[in-house]
Length: 386
Image (cartoon, rainbow, N blue to C red; front, side):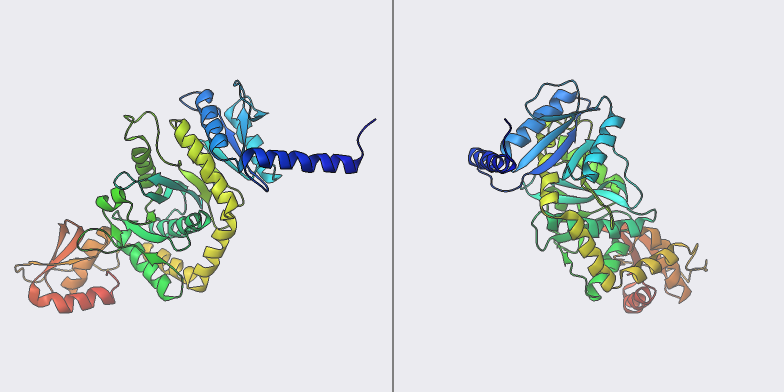
């Protein structure tokens, strides 16, 4: 004779209580899926990472998606990577998974991943925004979106007021100016200060190693290289040992949490990536992303992107002009984007100020005569070069 529904319910309650007493965790556990097919280290290595995550995090229930391994974890069968991704997406859609970790996944344009590394100088965590995917086809707009993505992920991982730094790469100065306009419009953003003597929100290599900002903004290709270096520098490059992986795909309206790891990620990184995915689910990442974009739009986000897009469509903002009479130029003006350097020089030539392009230790500079500095700064600010 079968048990009544009431007895079934009571039995379930006792089972949950027994599990809670055993694990020390009360309440719902986050179910995180892990696809195990496609790793260069074999599926056993990924399962080892999954078992480590399960052991270290009793509030997580890991679900292995794949085949050919022995484990006490829950397993959902899949014969190849394609089938594993189909199964993973179905389970995310029907909410039998709260988040997932996988390799070699193609996100739509507008979605890119925010990585999480351990910086070597002080063992500090830092988010890299972003590491894979394409936030936008225009570089500056992509890096602005990466900033918002990074803030959303950091907040989902319990950093209430994360600091933001911009890596010193092409586009950094334009991104800095755009973010400051957004802040002036009312968007809450806390800028980090470089540890170098001259400070500033644009970060150098030293700042990367020390983890100066909570969030380092870059483009995805640069972020991908940085992830490789941070996670595998101690192993010679063919086995990722440190960090949390390439992180969750984030987009303004993206509706699931899928974290990426590399085919070279070892068990320690797999374990941390599963924890990262669970943190994002627990911290309501998708809700955080919607909230950040809502706040950014109130601060003029759409108009800002529109002005940047229109600016990139201009072939030459400043027409070719004949340089004025040459004279010694010893005074540097920093803060100009390398892609705009020649245009900035020509803007000064146009008003009869002789200037030359240069490259200082902190990046591109315009060189002028000391007596022309005040007027040159006025022109460059008016034309939005600085």
